[in-house]
Image 1 (spheres, rainbow over the protein chains, first blue to last red):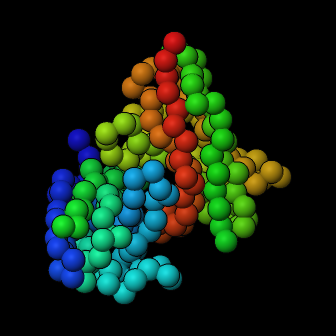
Image 2 (spheres, rainbow over the protein chains, first blue to last red; image 1 turned 120 degrees about the horizontal axis):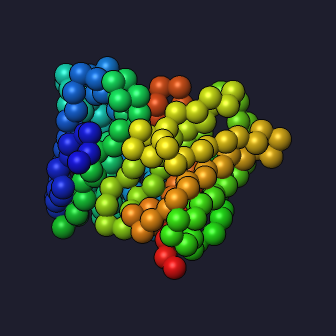
Length: 109
Length: 117
């Protein structure tokens, strides 16, 4: 049982826009910036968004937002190379731990 | 370019201690928290804990009784020890750099550790 809730799977076609969500509570998402991590099978997890700022080198097709206790990652102009597992994560001050979502498997059709 | 590389045995016997080291290159240990995260087969990511640049530690409560994370600043390395392992500890173990704002900005490639006799 993950502290943060993500969709198990999302799919979209090339060129489409998709939004992944991450729901927590006031102790975590409601209080801290959320990181989004792209994990391609057997690869190194990579930060694609932190808060609403993508790290340098990340495509501007990626954008992030937060409303209350739900964070979102939007990918515009979906590309085949975007197919991966996406995890959200932040700090939880009540648990005093880093918490993760269960991950969303993004499939590009 | 910041790089992290995990190293250690890929096979550990039940009840023994799992030991891994993460070597950091391209960056100083100072100013960050150095984390361990794992992913059991077919499951999501689980945070194990971190050590700060001053040696302060914070562990996942579910693992706290079995975990030790330590720092060797002279070698630019940090280590994980997990005692009394069982098959449930079989996972890919990642080391990662955590910023003050809880971003995990650099990760290692991960290393598979299997617990089996």
